[in-house]
Image (tube, rainbow, N blue to C red; front, side, top):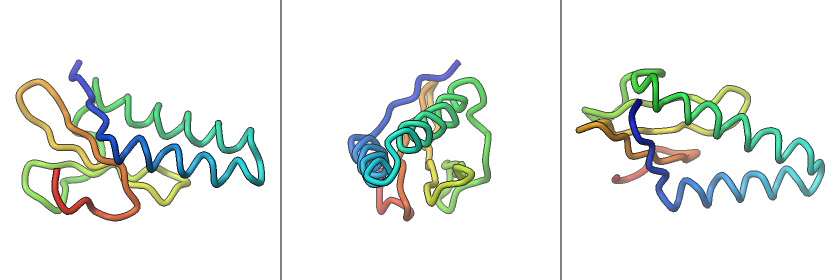
Length: 91
């Protein structure tokens, strides 16, 4: 499969989301974080999941049940990943 590289901001967004949800429900925060990580890790074996991205050469995977989109830049055996509520300005 392809190697997934999480951008620092993607990991930060993921942890911020977990903390926010965990304030009300710690188990739900952990569960949603795990669901997002699992969805993204599927991209290693299936890099063309999701839709064509708004920028040529990218893909966008909407993470069901969350406000997040995993944006990936695919090339030369690896995929660079950005996780955001909005489209990243650049990779």
